[in-house]
Length: 203
Image (cartoon, rainbow, N blue to C red; front, side):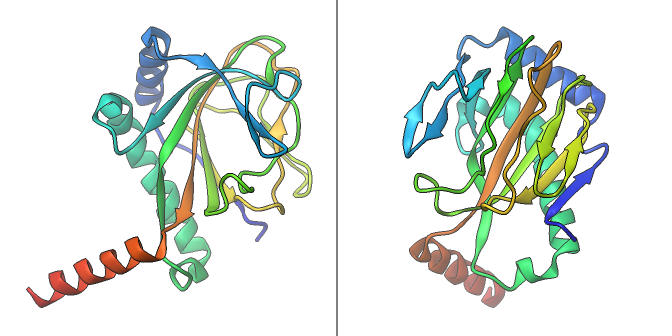
């Protein structure tokens, strides 16, 4: 066990192509941002990409959400089966926010990074699904693993410092991915969820 799991067929080719088509036609695309020394913004030396910042909780992203969420739920189910301890820690859930990213020729995420930090301390798992076959995948140097970018394949891993990763760069051709996180639930929200579950059991 190395805290990084990869599964094939998380999304079908048809769904992947639908997400790409929606992305290409969407006017909300912006230049990709990163967090550098606690500062969120565009840092071209670290990352060159085009992205849409989506949210599972917002109706304006319902087309993306309907296509992507089942795949994310599948990844979460699989990693919970692989690491049973995930059912014995503080309450956590899929984060509402997620990104659809496009990397063109010579672009990429150049610098190793992890998904948990001062701006996102509650993140505990990261996930990613490749939307097309691409020449350049993703590298996890500590795990000595390079993932191949194959359409519909998904990866899920620890968001902590143990799992820095980067794109295989410079990117060649086109690469589309969708990526996001799971996070610990704040105590007051967790208590509300427990109360709700208790009431459901009593009714």
